[in-house]
Image (cartoon, rainbow, N blue to C red; front, top):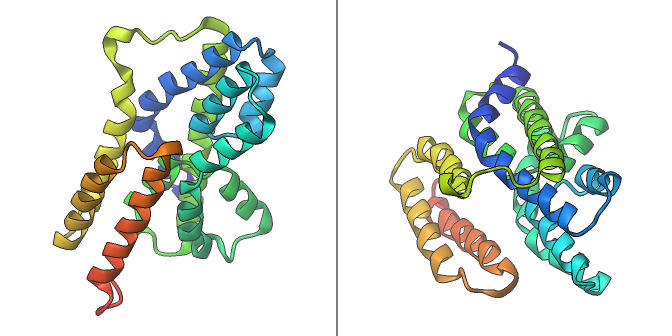
Length: 226
């Protein structure tokens, strides 16, 4: 099986967590009286779920444009960390693949590739796998946003699909906990994220990531790797 197909298939179990999120995005856009063209265009250009919803909500209440842009940038700060990790992997790839890889960075696609990183023989295989997961993510996200725009938020509240997203990440995280150092960093990050959850503009997420990286560096600095 090609790495592209493996990446595509690896994203499929996460799709149930993406669908209700996309439906909410489509519903919010419709409620804000955005046209179908505007919704699809924003979805194609921005492709960042949480910041899209925040931006639409702010525009709905006629917030200043700088507030909308700043909010989106703050919410998406975590992608700086993902991009830094992906940079050496895509370094030798053609510009078009680098551009597509950068555009498609999401929590889900990065998590899927990270969970499989030990199985790639070359960076090229990792990139092909990553692109496959991104294509699956793109299809699922765009289809669910369009469905949400047309039909509304069709996910029954009684099913509580909001839990599907964090649960999918837990499923990806567990296989990566290879030894005590990994577990320690994971537990530390979990506790810190709860303590910093109330920081404004979701900066607690970025602070948690930086503190987790600092701890991982401290634990591995003598050997240089885990």
